[in-house]
Length: 497
Image (tube, rainbow, N blue to C red):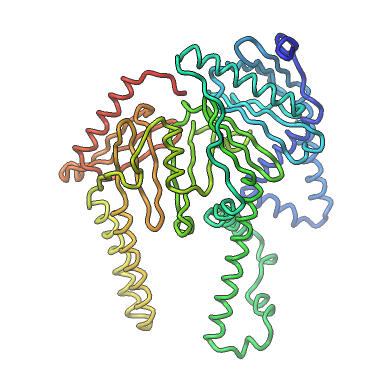
């Protein structure tokens, strides 16, 4: 009955959709707030508060009017082959989304829609970033029905192209609160926010910034009589408190985003649901996964955990409907390997234990040369103008940087397993990028005159999701990998976009 009613009939969105599109516009503005900070600061410096108040009111009114007009001029209907949308405030365009070209389908339940029982259906096409549609403020049951209709249509196409039986949904991964906390500790979300806030603070006028006298006045008078050791201890304690606060913010953000995380295997791909306040349910088609990245930083290494990302077409990673990357937080290496095998239809004895080929020592020498060019003159300058302990500290730091360059060179390696290439990087932690060679769009074999003499080359593999660069690989192996990848591209003509 749903299909009969919806087909060939133009439907309108609910008036509640104005709230969704207005909130989305505000989120986009806040995302670029760092760039808008100078304008905001200049406005707040006006002699009267009426100026910023009027500008703020005008901005909010403009967002609401635009959202209202967008909803009023938004029409959609279903056809036998897909979804037809007419949208646009001043210039109206019609968009035809064929079921076979729909890449991701997700049901979003923002916190402000939960009391109303409403949800939004976000549809991402395999075309350009403009071919993304959100049917906002639908009834929850209607959004699920429409999502299931798209999934069923895709399965029908899949069944007609393949003789393999359709499998039932299987839960692959569930994350507990402890796992989410580990992900929060090992992610850099809070540090990125802090860096942005510091950028905004640096643009404030000097009269609004904290002076050194103001900072000193915050401390008690007894601090003036403290010894150097006590001052260093207090500074260390304050630094630790600041780090603890930032880690706490990062953990809180992870809990809000990834609470109740569940990844399931569905017939044509993967389904993931997560969110404490606003629930997001994303469906990703398996054949459109371009690469799989397994990432680990130094904190995650302490817990022996990795973050796994299923990477799709690049434009989908920053679409207006939200982040379309499928990230599985805080999994073990065995679970990471299982996810790679499911996503790319491959099998490994051990990703970490693959026979990786090292890159040329020229990679290390180049970094040591630059370190020597910068470090030696600096050390000579310090010897002449500073006490010995300063020279000793800088020398130790220079030695640590040289050792870090050596360790990263030893870890950097590439392996080819059947139809996939694996690039390994890292220093303390490890990161792996698994590349299906049949999905490579372009191969760049880069060699300077100096590199020709040393028989090395840079190999760049361009995919729809990222560019993978293997530096200072032996020229013979680079040509072998390039030839093998081109062979697989020709031998695997299946559609994967």
